[in-house]
Image (tube, rainbow, N blue to C red; front, side, top):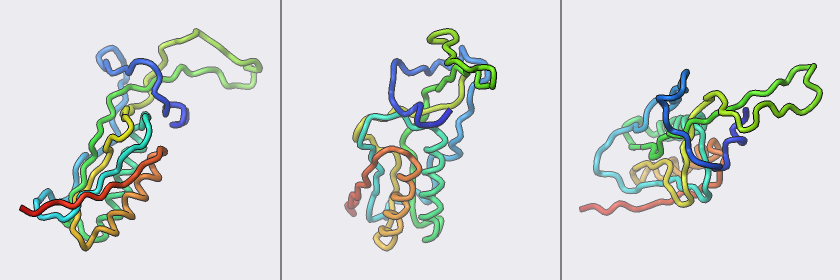
Length: 166
């Protein structure tokens, strides 16, 4: 199934993994990357502007795209962190889609389905991804966040927050 089918938040989140055989593994490799030091000038935040579910595939794609763009300035010139964790288990009740299935199949209504992936539920105004950068790399980080937001499939804004030295 496509990711757009899991975008809307419907019903209760299903997070109890102990009841599911064949649990889906999380695709996110790392949640933090770069050099965690305290002498950065700016913090950039990628903020969601609507209530949505974001699949773990798109979170990882956005993280990789942003890190790859910011790494052009050097691996130790920024510190980035993914702020959400995909807890919600997504399920799909597969239907017959062969040549003999000429009518719309309903199957068992409201069947539980098989676990297909994970998603993070985020509310409007929630920060998904943040990065600390120096003044010299601010424009590069803004471009990286623009690329990362295109991977998410939901409207986002980038906030630039100056960090106080002290």
